[in-house]
Image (cartoon, rainbow, N blue to C red; front, side, top):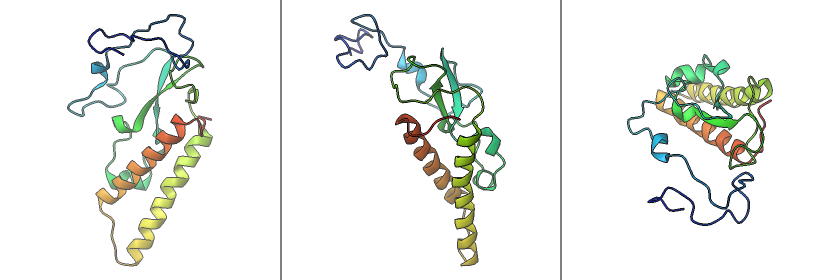
Length: 158
């Protein structure tokens, strides 16, 4: 890839570009993907053709006590991932297809949040009261876990 020219300067030898019929492909302006000031949220993130914005920790869990105690905005950019709406439109063929709600996935994430609640309650009984930053660290860990699972195609949005 040549950033000066904004194009690939060699073909895609192992076919990761999603069956691109041309020898050379163009990329979007990646500078538009940066959020220098951290102001992007679900509602202000741009749309990408053939993709949906997916809440890694689903919106249905926005009132979970872990989310509330962290003061976490469920629409925060860190909790959003673009997922394809059909096969062959993303350079990562392992990403699951996203189309609306996904109760099985939501339940899996809820179980992870529930485990955090149990650990926090156990710590409280031992005299260690969690701060918002402790809850946020757990949320960050859950987001990271599901990002990896989604990227590797190890979890589906069902």
